[in-house]
Length: 149
Image (tube, rainbow, N blue to C red):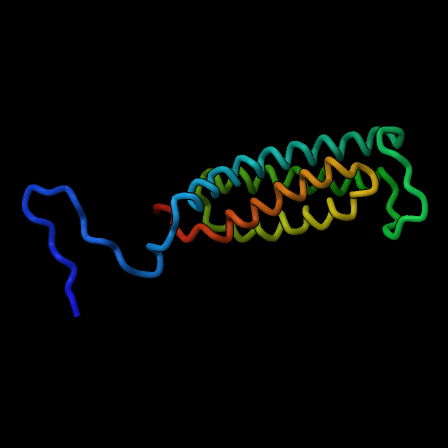
């Protein structure tokens, strides 16, 4: 068994940390910060989608014989509500709130499912949002660092 060596006097190196929380990569930590900003952007885009769907049914293409029988106004309200909540969760992640990660994962998962069901109306926009949501879920799940208290 080897003991971690103490730094010699005058050196600036520190012994390697060990423990469960030390496995955090800088990519995941930076990804969490980026995920907070992406949550804000995703929320704003959801609000825009929602307002466009609520304002008029002519903005999005009419889809016939689709499994999910919601009209565009209903989809607009879904996207608007999810967008507003995602903005608040993104703000919480940027502030370092401990509740924001778990709530963020759950709400982004719901947003991913909603955008999957939204695919026939705006396929490219929905696919881009799904890709952003997958990255956000990855970033929030992989960062093991603890926020400072």
